[in-house]
Length: 183
Ligand SMILES: Cc1cc2nc3c(=O)[nH]c(=O)nc-3n(C[C@H](O)[C@H](O)[C@H](O)COP(=O)(O)O)c2cc1C
Image (cartoon, rainbow, N blue to C red; front, top):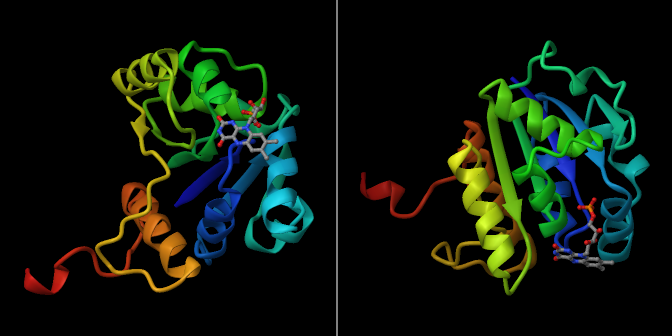
């Protein structure tokens, strides 16, 4: 499986860090926007370089010459985690002016999995319309919204609860879901 992860300047980059860390041997590529890097550092103290061990390669967001910018280099899923409303708006309107928004455009045109982990609150009518437009176009809108039914006892529990949801959406193995033992 080949996964591409886009990290934008919305709050919650720790979810991206944990998602990436748990990918293990899965082939992955990472793209951070300018504000994605800034929020990552503000919220976790990490730099993109410190994530290099968890991914095959980090591409610059302004590198539209990157192989991922073309539909001829397949990937199985493109996940934007966390996704700002700014990037949401661009993706919903077919604007591919950086590698993150271009990968979204490629995912949509090639009918590949596009998972948009939106992080903003409250959402404006424009944001809701953009999310709806993108959903109709085939994206999965997956607000950063950790579940509480597993009774998280710590921040890592809480973060992993949502990371599991994203893993499930991608098709990766997950820890036990709600009442899984009753099936
Ligand atoms: C500390 C910080 C937190 C932010 N949190 C959010 C957020 O949760 N959601 C959001 O949509 N934008 C948030 N923003 C604003 C975005 O970073 C800003 O709109 C930026 O232009 C997004 O660009 P990008 O999508 O290319 O990363 C935040 C900015 C900062 C500095």
